[in-house]
Length: 246
Image 1: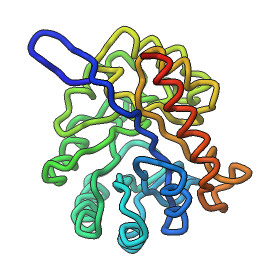
Image 2 (image 1 turned 30 degrees about the vertical axis):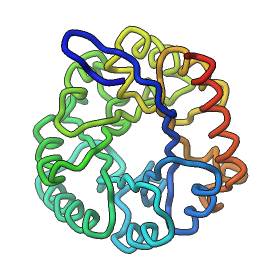
Image 3 (image 1 turned 180 degrees about the vertical axis):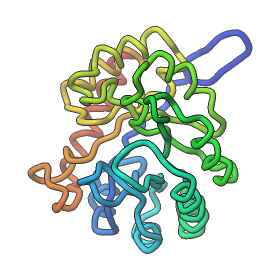
């Protein structure tokens, strides 16, 4: 979708399929399977932290898919001044290593969107696009969070399962939010335990971006590399569901 004065209108483009990559060994399967973009992270035991500069550099050499790189230093969603300074430096170094965009977002002590901390890091991105990650699902007041996050500068996607418990619990909320707000539909990247049978419902509600991790790895194991056939099955599923919804 794109915005014109006074209203929204739909532009039919291929839906986005983003997959989580942990290192260069994931590149061949993602490319061969037809993924559009990689979300680059480390330590999935902590639901994804900032990867090393070497990981990003090696992935950049291994493929030409856009790399959207995680900026997150702990397994929660709050941050501190000293940690934020480290993340700012990491953003600079990762951009030089080949990051095409970033994934970030913070909550305050009362589980509200921490706009100040988020903007402090966004200011270091020098205009690069970024995704607000699933911190939004852990906000105490989802409606209040959705009032704030879409207006943040440089943001072009919100990774969300609709619930802190993931897409299986949040599917109804995601579909409702997308169906009633064209702006939300444009920004939502559905993820967080996304299952194949969620995709047609989301597509009918207007969602055009999808994010998968374990589902494109044999046995759902983070120790296994991305499998091209599994990516291809998701590529077909997403494309067919969106085509049917148009």
